[in-house]
Image (tube, rainbow, N blue to C red; front, side, top):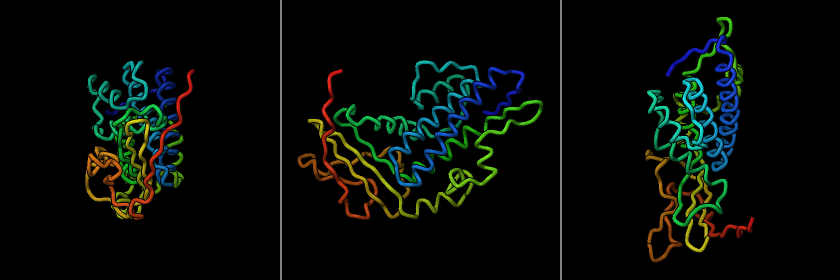
Length: 249
């Protein structure tokens, strides 16, 4: 997808720039959180960043996205159905939408589970944003309009460029070879939530976005679980907890 918007189309320029600005802010914030090991919060903001970028593409392409909410998979499918193909990782989009549900663990149904890693999420977020954002060119009086993203890139701001594998071909290998943070969750019956937050030394080459979180090693003994990535502490961060009871509205 590649399109140039001239400022003569004022509404399209305004709407697209608005979505880009919102998306850029969420993207930079997501990177900061993921680099700091706040993987759940970083993944949630990565979802909203990708969501807003995709809605910007919809604005650009005159495609209505009303009613799709925060579901980045459905937004991408909508664009594909209109012939706008961005080449995004479908597993990652499903992963982001699922991770977004972690904002309210008390709403998760028994059986819900997932595993998140800061390095894997950061790498794919960077690549996804690169694939989407490179398609935007907005001009005014023949000159390209500069966005905050462009300013941060020009300044070499660490929040944008640090360990960004879309800008540094060696960044992915470094991220996967150094310690990173993981979070896993599995919702059991009776509102019990099994969680683990831990650090792992390095990532092996697997599909990091289709992993079962805290999969039981023995169905008869649900407290014995497998970790997706090897914990450096041997799994001491494992925690059983129940979310607070919901109050009647």
